[in-house]
Length: 154
Image (cartoon, rainbow, N blue to C red; front, side):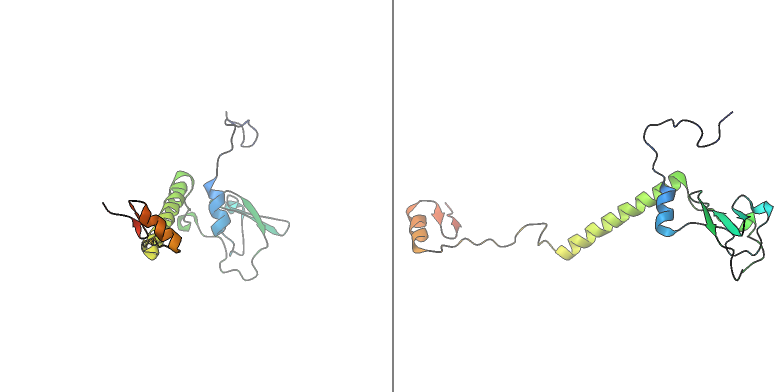
């Protein structure tokens, strides 16, 4: 028989990264029944009412959040199970986040290359060699293979 979660020793030294917490932190929690006037015992899986405070369970990250009952409820009871769409979790959510990060990275790189048009990525497009003083031009003329406009062609 398995022990309840949180009471057994962890199997790994490093904690796992929970993609659900990241997405809930960025996009907000996925709560069910926040617009319902009445929450009964049949809804205890995702909503509970205790001492005038309703506790809603996020169906993505499994956190419980305390919120006051709605002032103007839109429905009498939370939606039935058939109408509830569960968000992505686990590996499917991780794949979605990683693929979006790759797409953003590739799109940013493409935009950088497109706007750059070879100025920074391909280096300078014009190099000038010039003699600033008469002494430099005399030195370039005295040494074979040098000129003021760069290396002399043989």
